[in-house]
Amino acid sequence: MAERVEGFGGDPSKIPPSPIGFFPTPPEPPIAVSYTGKVKGLYYDRFGDFEGFILETLHGKEVKIRTREQPVERLAERAWRERILLTAHVAANRLVSLTLIGPPRE
Image (cartoon, rainbow, N blue to C red; front, side, top):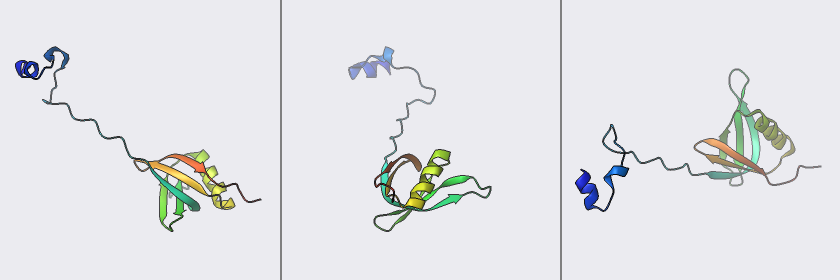
C-alpha cells in the first residue's frame, strides 16, 4: 500500500492507520435558510416549556422555528405582540440567529 501512495506522489508516513480501512469524509456543514415574516404564535410542550414559535413568511408560508432558549421566547413574544417583522436564520433545524427588521409600533 505504501508503494501505491508513493506512486501517486504522496508520503505514506504522513497517513495514520485507520481501523476501518478508510477515512470517512466529514459531513457538509448545514446550509442556513432564512425566513422573513411575522410571528404568528408561540408553542410549548406538554409541561409548559417553550419549544419555539411559528413564523408566517412574507409569502404566506408557516414555518415552525424550534428553540428552547428563554431569551428567544421573550423576543419572539414581543415580536408577536408588537407585530415586528423579523428574519429567522435556521441551519440543521435549529435557530442560528434572529434579525429584527422593523421597529415596534408606537
